[in-house]
Length: 385
Image (tube, rainbow, N blue to C red):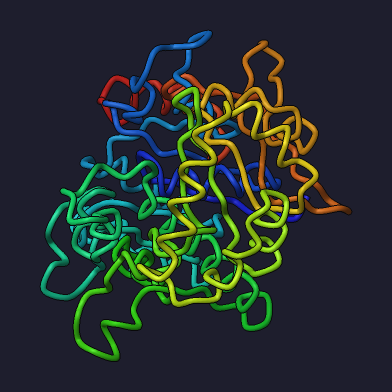
């Protein structure tokens, strides 16, 4: 697998860092999760399924668990010993914490110049907001992303996915891979300062035109992705379900409106997004309300239209194509899990079946770096591990 031989020390918690570490573990990296005595919080988020929460199962599989008290000198020593033999460190402490503990980038680089040290935070390691705590929702709010759901002047609503978390984890993974590639040429590692706000803000080039051109927020009713386009919209069906048209290209409009006998509306789909397309939206609202979701799903299948039924998560999980793709797969314990989305032909990822109990691998990790049985016992007795 692509990352065989790469060792990662994962100090992160919740979603961005663990998600990134999971992808690396799925593709062969050895990921050692450094857990405090309280443990990874997602162990207890949601009901246990065969001993582990679904959240934990789908972010922490394949990782070793090392319980370590980093507020002790002995704990710091162990971490630095491991860091000297590692390739990547993932840190999601608030800015300044790792330096105060003595495990920051400079502390590690002095022992391992090739280390790629990735710091994850809400607002970055410097700047006016660096010290402010936040999770995904705060980053979505302060970057303006949350406001993009406020169509028709409605109040903001909680976002359906933690986009800032996933943006951060995904872009940080890209950054780590680039740093490892550069290290293969120069031998030198690097330090990555990755924030939720930076990552999420970078995902908004499609909607900043009004901000840059006219110094005002976008009028969402006139934006293609936010309700302005008749063929990029959500429509209710007769059974109080919903269907989406998800492609506003003219060929899709021509195909559907021709099939529905309303070729007179095609030209309106060339009009600017917004009120000019309202007659098309009204026709589609009235039309989709005449049949059930299942009936429309079957009717649209051969019409050359970009569309999809709006499914709940349970319905989505049952779809065969996700299993064909390996995105949902059974574990050996009988519990289904999310697969790995990065699909190589020559070296496909192999998600591990291993799920570590809290601190389950502490003994073997300590033994690997030279701690004999009596020394390990002292560490346990002293509350270090």
